[in-house]
Length: 166
Image (cartoon, rainbow, N blue to C red; front, side, top):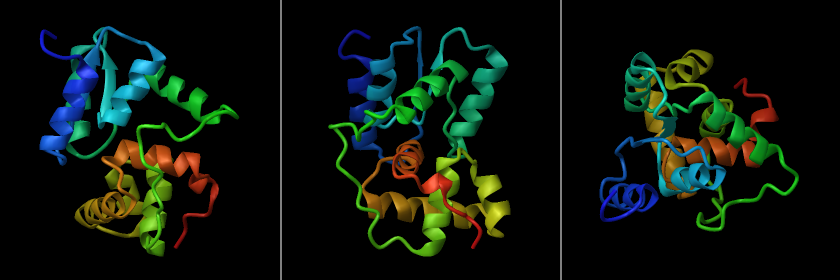
């Protein structure tokens, strides 16, 4: 990119349009670039060798609020999160999660397990629109930028291991 790198562009785009769903499509499979892109607000991360059908589905998934990740990228995230030295990235403020209702916590737990809105809605007997409202409320209350960061937060704080049945 001639004026700035993809991480910087992602950060600028998310600052200007915080509700936009932004996918990174790159040739770079570098661990730090993956994490910096997600921290900057990317909704998903795909490598350019992804097939056209998978790319089209990833765009649709991101538009639904899901977080499409290429399997090799998802593996990197899991390895980093499972590492004993895994810590909140320094560029992100520590979300407090204070003031989250039990229902919001249930949604956050399922986000951390990678569930798309449709599955969350089915599991909690809600509509997809209501789930989207809960996700928005979670982001507002935690100060996180997108559902990917919320899912990472849930994993880092062991929320996915708790019972999500409300």
